Image 1 (cartoon, rainbow, N blue to C red):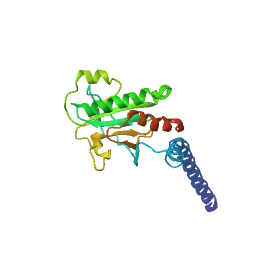
Image 2: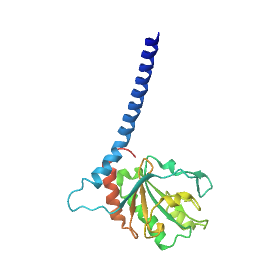
Image 3: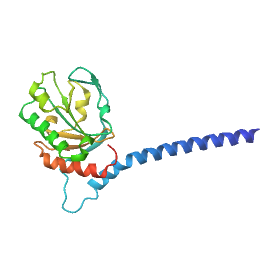
Image 4: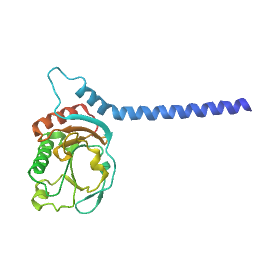
Length: 202
């Protein structure tokens, strides 16, 4: 009887171990395209090629509650599965802000057949009303009220202002790139195009 129980226990432990291994393999298969894109892009670069965006500490963007302009609750987790160009700025959206929104729109459009793999998000850091012109001009950008949200602190800007930058979030919801102040859309487009080329998800 004891031997029978030991055999059943051993079989049970083996089944659990096998299940965990299968789950790990599924995760690796799903994550490998993104990991491969990072490795290919950042570590297997041809001589003379430089990256425009700065690789930041790769970490998940939290699912902190935000709100669309119509008041509907929204979370950045709803954008998982897409590459997301994100920026932070106040609702008044002065010239530098408009330049970022324009740049993100153009970068997405220039991805051609891959443009539907890219989303845009504007995290609005205050309660200032947006102009009707800005809303219409950048329709398609997720305009998200984020005043006092801890999410804003997850976007790094060492030595500068977080409003100076455009960021890139990968399809797994990880913050991965920060583009410089007054970023050139054409150079952002090249960085994103390379990542889209190697990634098979998102």
